[in-house]
Image (cartoon, rainbow, N blue to C red; front, side):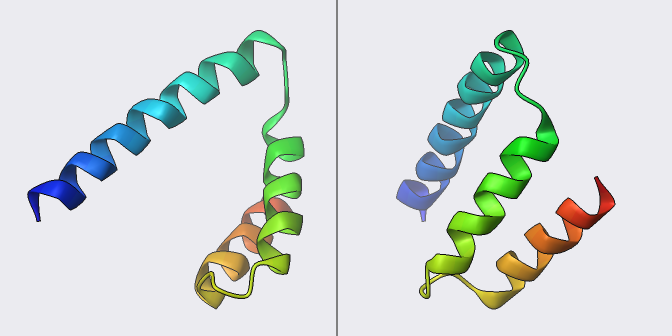
Length: 61
């Protein structure tokens, strides 16, 4: 359990760093969401709920 929690924290820190880089270069949330959504659709191992959530998020943008 501790290992999984450490993974969550580490991943969150990595996402924060990625967010800083994307903001620096002015990459829009719409672009990132659309790109992730397309990539997620090709990965058959991801939960279908995640793919549907990303599609819904893209539609809101």
